[in-house]
Length: 328
Image (tube, rainbow, N blue to C red):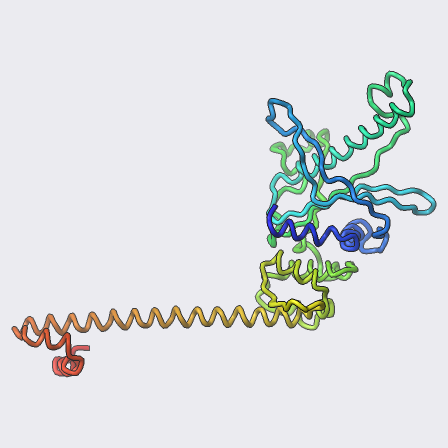
């Protein structure tokens, strides 16, 4: 796992931010899922990988997985919420996410089966075969894929997109699986207002990180005061050096971004000047060598070989000879 994935996982494991993502995605920003209603789940799943002749189980690790349990209108609601963080575009993500969700459902079936065999040793043939009773139900699994690559997600967003066959007559019989893809570049400006934590500012920064101007951040109230954890998250995911001090707890991103841009421009100007000076010196040396070569050739044609050695060692004499013979 790379640095971006590791630090993003730590940042987004925070319950408030985790709720923020799923409230945005499921409830359009309404504060429905609360931190106190979340419980951690084991992110390890067992799977048999493709081409594994030994049929050995291998461990697959989800990035973040939590159980949401709450009551709405006196009805118990249970959801398994998974977050997959991608710092690179994963072109098989639809298959991978579908596998993760299928494994979560498989684990639920196994847990129910185990509990039923403890509570009800005598079962019908159908119950024993399936592991479930006809009234047993599973918890829905919702997986969001968060694109932190800083690029447009040009990968397939569903199983149907991945298939070589595009015939609708055939595809209507092939179950599809669609990614819940949260990508900053696909969000509208008003969407960032729907986040309740610093995540809104982070998503907006990620969307505009490659913009040529600062119009989007000027007078942006969201960016006036963000928490240090969000600022660090932005630095890591975008590779931007905001020149934060160790004791900075609340950061004005407008000022920090402006300072960062100015310092980057200054460094660019300094490198440009250095390269310009080097190129100027090189051109000057080349021009001087060519001029001296023409002088030597002229002196040789005149048979004045004795003046050649003097001209190469004496700058004053060499300049006089340049003027005398009109060598520029």
